[in-house]
Each structure stands twice: as C-alpha cells, then as structure tokens.
Length: 286
Image (cartoon, rainbow, N blue to C red; front, side, top):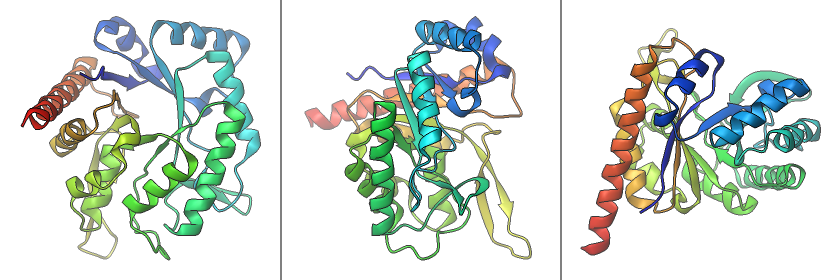
C-alpha cells in the first residue's frame, strides 16, 4: 500500500496550529519566493523546521510555461534556498507571469500549443539543471480558455511533463474549476492525465463569480474557502488509479478558520485517499 502523506501549506497565520497538531500533519509546503531574501537566522530556522516536518518548496514566480527563456536569477535564488533549507522537493507552475519585462502579477495560462510544450519543457529542464532536481509542475486554474490553443489541457500537460522528464503536482481544484468552467467532465479530464507522474496534490476551494454584463458564471479558485466534496471525490479517483505514494497539501491563503476545521479537511483527505486505495485493491483482485 502506498505511503500517502497529508499536510498543509505553511503560513505564518497557521504556524501555531501546525506545531500544536504536529501529530496530525505529515508534511508541509513552503512558498519559496517569500524566503528568497531571508536572513541567515531565518534560513537556519527553516532548515530546522525542514528537519522536524517533511518540507517541499513551492515556487510562484518562475513562469516556466512561457515562450521566453526562464529567469535564471530567480532559479538561482531557488537553488540557494534549497541548498540552505534542504527540503525534500520543489515545485512550480505551468504558467507564465511576465512578458516583455512586464510582471503581470498572476499565474496566467498560456496558449496550449506544441511550441508552448517545447518552450515549457526547455525551461523546466533548465530549472532542473540550476536547482539540481526536477520541479513538480502544477496545473493552473484559468477563467479564460487560452486563445490560440491547438491542444486541450490534458494533452498539453502530458507533453510538458514528458518532454521535461518532470513529475506532476496535480491541483485538483484547479482541474475541477477548469473542467466546469469550460464544459468538460472533471473525472474524464483527470483520467487522461499522466497519473503515473503525479507526485503531489493540492486541495483548495473557491467560489462562483458572474462575468460582468453576462449571466455566465465561472468558478474562481481563491484558496479562502473549504475544499468542496467534488474535489475530495477527485482525490479518491486519483488514489484509485495512481499507485505511487502521494503527498496531499491543503492550501489556505486567507479567511482562516479555527484550526480544528482545517484538521477536519485533512481527515477528509485521508478518508478520500483510503477509499481510493481500497478501490484500487478491489480492481487488482477482480
């Protein structure tokens, strides 16, 4: 049986709860960019933390899914942080965040094309060379179906992780939001992804918004709401079809509830994983 782990994204607002309930948290994920300019004292504290709780670093500004070459200065900062902190792994997003020297301040989904696959794979391979390990690449949510795309999202993601020889960080709420926003079946979309490459999983929540001047709605991934049942169902489906160990991280970036409520979501994730593993066993013996 896979040794799955369930944890939470490290946030200053959640630090006390994480330490108090360390017995119910298997791993943590640290937003790397927040610590690129950390002092030596802060880096020592982070390394101590990584020695106490299995830690991964999560990058948000590299923009590896861009046609432009990767920003090597940012990747060097990631390499230095990883060397100082000694996490188990690191990750980034399948997004672009800048163009022509302009920072857009958003994880934008690029056009899904063969040329985009080649560029993202090239950038990811370069990131691997600089940091010393391949990043797990995360699918992103989008409110706009990327224009000029010639591929759908599963084929595009599969092409990048194969071309870059990188693992996949599967954000299940991002997958769910993109599916329902653009008329796809979330379960069918998940099953078309390269599930053998999934190393880690993100869980989060969102809320529905209305487009200005339109009756059309979009599900916005906002990280300030609880994980919906549909996303836990996707976690069960994933655990049914991906036999390798999975690290599942609950993301919360605001509107923080009392910590016991977050623990209930961690428990729900464990229940979803267990249901999937049981279903996998049944499939194997059938």
